[in-house]
Amino acid sequence: MFFFASSSSLMQQLQLLLLAGFIGAILTFWQRCSTFSKRPRVPHKTYQHTQFAQFLSKDEAGDAFSGQRKMRFVKTGDSAIRVINDVLSAVECQALIAEAEAEGFLRPEAFDASARSCKRLHTVDPSLSDVIMGRIQPSLPGIMVIDGARWRLSRFTHHWRYVKYSRGGHFIPHFDGSKLLKGHEMTVFTFQIYLNDDFIGGQTQFYTDFHTERLPSHSIDYGHVTTYTPGNPPTHSVNPKTGSALVFDHASRCVLHSAADVEEGFKYILRGDIMYTAVEEDIRILRNPALKEQGRSWCEETAEKYGTRTYTGQVWWCECAADRHGADCCIDDLGRKSQCSTASSHGSSAEGINLLLMSGKRACGKDFVASILVEELEAAGVSVHRVALGSVNKRAYAERMGIDAQRLMNDRAFKEEHRIAMVQHHTDRNAEDPSWCLKAVFDESVLSGKKVMLLTDLRTQEDLKWLLHSAADVRGSVHLLRVDASDEARSARGWDKHPVKDSLSTETDFDSFTAWTAIFDNSDQSTGGEAFAREWVRNTVMMRLPAALALGWNGSLG
Image (cartoon, rainbow, N blue to C red; front, side, top):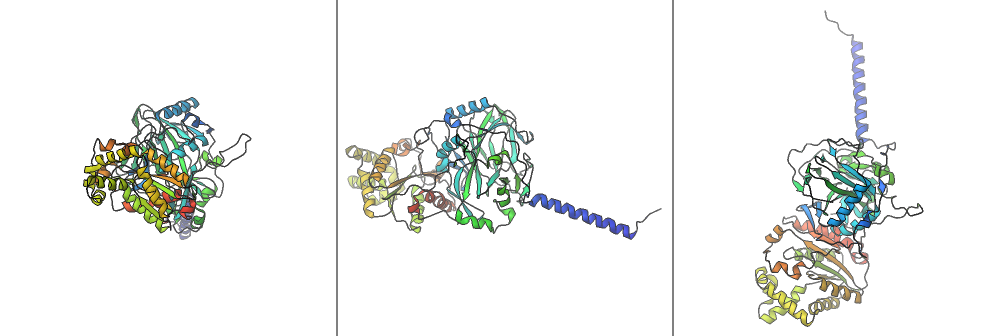
């Protein structure tokens, strides 16, 4: 026997099903797109204030440790991931590990150990931020373009997490989040220093070919880690090296990454976040965005409550929000808030000539970068006199040897045949008059009446001392630019590895120098290399010139 429900009963059931589906859709939409009308609960504060910078070596400039602080991009032609060598010395790293161990590490209870297995110590330490920012700022972009607006390098959040991974410790593939603040500030880069390398495993792995759906802002529980399953193995892997820093974008160019299992020993890292502030004229762009919400990194509603937001739209509130991600961390002895220190931008103004001094090894591409710099400065209305010490020496050497000076200037193979002899010629002339070559280029530049002297081949620290003294005499300013490149890129440009040439003081004297205004990795050999170098010139070099010289330049929107 079969029973049939009445038509009115069926209609009621259908209506109930439709209503339930509608309510479910509303709840799903609310979870994904909520503007967080209620202030969320911030996790219990577990961090402590420290002053661990006392364990770092400092001089009057704040940095007594030099090493060979070279910056390189992990993926050639892509500035989203970079490594900076020798940010801390091995001695400094050991001191920080010892202090962290003395304070004690705790397992982050909010995280499932299957996703993230480690222990950590959470500190707030503006003193540490000051020292480290001074060491890495030359390797950071002065301006970032995000959501169509320009953002200027500002500060660390001052929240430093010491993380300890023991055997089996790991962090599955995940996206880091940007910490957003009222006043249009947000973190753009994850910053981590490897405090040791005496362990096996523990590489930081990146999946640059992994893409996933971006969604509007939607809240998740603090400690939740979404499981992502990359279809391919890591595209890039960074091996820990004591004292080196890994810096990678966690905003508009966020990359999926993981911490590989530690197989033997203990791995220690120091983790922070680098903040940028929107250029005031561009805040209107953020308030009237052209991009859809799921395509943006900035979220006004999240910033109102100091939330953290990932590339995929996930939002949570961590304990860092309790002090507005470090904005309240600078407290004087009377408990009064004071202004946190920030990264410097434009250099000091000069009444006289401005010296831009460029250094780099053979075949690193100094002339290529210098040509772009001249173009950009002149496009901004700044007159430039471009000079090279090598040109003065080559002309004198060619005259003495009776060879073609123009060929010596333009024929790389011919120049390399004479390099050692030319360096010796320069050394011999310096013995007679140490500043003969420097006087020639400096006097020529002053007489030119142009605002900038661009020297494309600064070679020794003795030359730098002379130029600093001469600039002071004419009330000028000095800005130091370092151009590096990989051995592979240099070889493609004609560099031949030579034990004598490569050990000359003109090649090595700046290896351990750190007081650069800006550093660039010029390894890109692709057709995009020019645009990449131009971006660095516009958004980093131009930003660090005196404001009067830069004519109000605030970075490129192109």
